[in-house]
Image 1 (cartoon, helix red, strand yellow):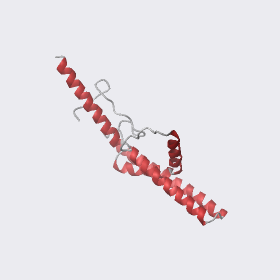
Image 2: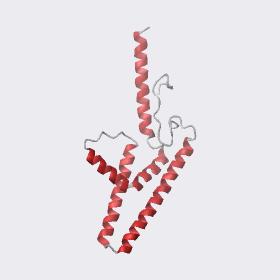
Image 3: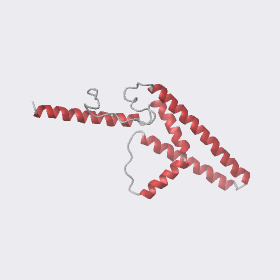
Image 4: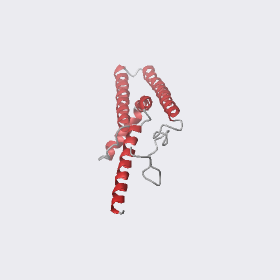
Amino acid sequence: MSGEHTAADGPRPEPIRFFGTTWLHHDGGYALRRAGVGLGALLAAAAGAFVLRFGYEGLTIAKVGSVVNVLVVAGFAICTALAFRRTWDGFVRRREPAADEGAERSMQNLLLIGFVGTLLAYSVRCLIEAPGEQLHRREYEEACARHDRRKRKGRRKHP
């Protein structure tokens, strides 16, 4: 990066949930926040899995049959995997606008069912960086580079 920018001088970093703009310089309790968010997401995922286990036990008590039990477990496993993947991808690139609103709503329902995957993605990503830091850093550095180019171009025109 060519230099530090302030609000009056150029682009500002976009805040990240739970981290604000501490991701930029890894200050303001950044490491502690990362550990807290990671641990919190892991504990929430464990609590969610525990609640899902109660639901599965309810199906077992109701004796709905092994086919239904397998379908329920497979459904939650697939939704969890989809939620993990979609959340993980959202940390490194922006999603394209949805062409079909109905499909997007359906995907949101799948993500809601697979909430454990979303929580696990947050937890695992906190081991590497703040969730979304790579995307935000790349966009911020690109904005700073554009700002610097415009600033240099403007100086040459007006000596």
